[in-house]
Structures are given as C-alpha cells and as structure tokens.
Length: 137
Image 1 (tube, rainbow, N blue to C red):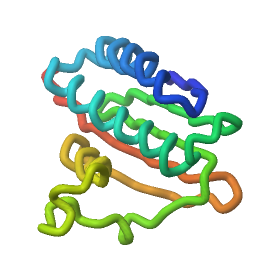
Image 2: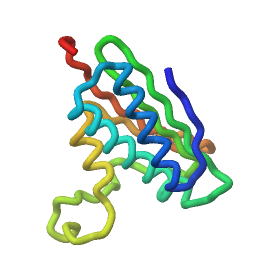
Image 3: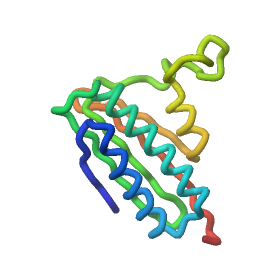
C-alpha cells in the first residue's frame, strides 16, 4: 500500500505522476494501463482540489493505492462538502460540449473499471477507482 497526503495545490500533480509511475512499475502494468490510471488519478486529484477543497490551502487531499492480485484500488479523499454523481452533468450533451470543465468524472469512468463516490459527512468525499489487472502481466 502507498498512501500520501497532499496539499490542495495543483503543483502536487507532479508528485502524483511519479507515484503512479512507481505503483504501475511495481504492479507490472503496461504503458497503456499506466497512462489510463495516471489520467484518472490526475482528474480525481484536480476535482478534489478544485471542487472538493475549493482551492483552500488549509485543506489536504489523501491518495492511497492498494495493489491486489487481480486489481489496483485507488482512493482519493478531500475535505470538502461532497457531491452526488447523479448531479454531475453529462459532458456529451450538446449544451455541455463547449464548457471548459466537466469531463473529469467522464474520463475516470472511461479509463477505470469501477468508480464509487462516498460522501463522508463532516469529513469530505472519497472517490474509489478500480483498475482490473491482466493475469498475464
């Protein structure tokens, strides 16, 4: 297991990228799988900082990777007020196509095999992402 606490600062994305690289190497992932996980984790971290913690430097984001024989589980937790997946607009609808933001959850769903969002009243939101591993790796 790898677990880190990050400042609510987008500069932390460089640290996240290095952690993804090392976890991917440890798990023996393909370059494509590493890229997919990197994109999903980046989006989750950006969402946690911008939308969850509202760029509040006094708040942090936790990131945890757990490697199992058949999957990698990744948890990103912020200290914000939470949100509902059902309320996230579909970025593929015509009225949303030209919006600057709103594609993070869509990208996470595209690149990962599972996505769960838990609102933790009084302590933020936890996003859990799962990437199934190829047994032949």
